[in-house]
Image 1 (cartoon, one colour):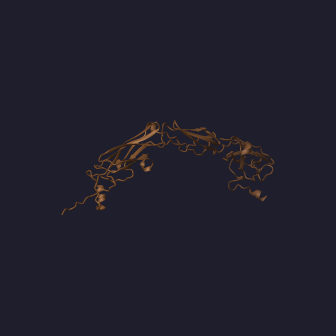
Image 2 (tube, rainbow, N blue to C red):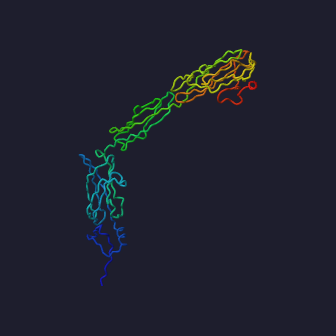
Image 3 (cartoon, helix red, strand yellow):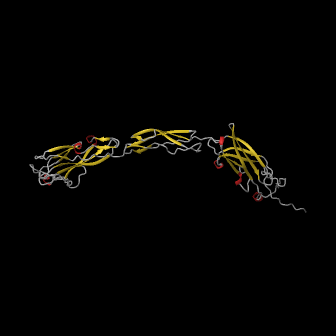
Length: 379
């Protein structure tokens, strides 16, 4: 009795020509198929990728090789712009039956998307055939010359706000990361109009980027804000003659201090921009004076806080009275600076007045225990 030899087989879709004959026993067991394929040595490779661009026609050519010793059924080759994993396929090429070790060259017309720098060819693109080596399925070529289409750079803008410097101007850029996707043909240049420095307020600005061949533009605004407070002027150190009757004298801020200077506003009039915060005296409200002996309410602030009435007196046995005006000066942007100036009344005994610190005060933020004299509270 003749025994039938068990045969390992490969699916008909592969059309493997083993020794010139395709064999497919109808009673083959499914478990044998995997082992047969795994040990078959089936392998495709792709190589010799060339991209040409002539007369407005773009072509890709390559070679696909059946590295297997026997024939393999028809397969599909994919042509991709860039990484095949991203799926930007330009063409599919059908490769007919290949005998063992056969090389098959092909050429296909494609349309290269702008910015393409590399083309990939993938053998057995649909993974129809399980191979012992999948890595050699892929080959590529970098584009050059006429095949490289220049991509225009991308201008990106955003509105910016910057602080003014001491000259009330500022440099700023509205560029928010403009870029050239293909970095060719030249270096990216970025210009903006106007270039700056920018003055206080909001200025429209246009930004243009160029790669030497193509360009793009965008626009935004630059806002310059003044955040520097004005610089107060020095004290005038006003000296008022004493009044035997302890009369009031009106002292304005302009009398007491020199004008402030602002980086954006120039010279600031204290009559317009200054405000008295408080006025203090280094002598008690009920200090003994020349004729009236005891006077009260030595300091009176005006309703608009631009001036104060102060008594032109000093204590009989003191070293002279010093009124200290604490004031604020505000620029057009709302920045505030605080300073002081002094008005003094000499001692009846003569000599230069010396400021010995606040004892009596009227206004906002007066030091503790400067509210007034005991005698005045009793009168």
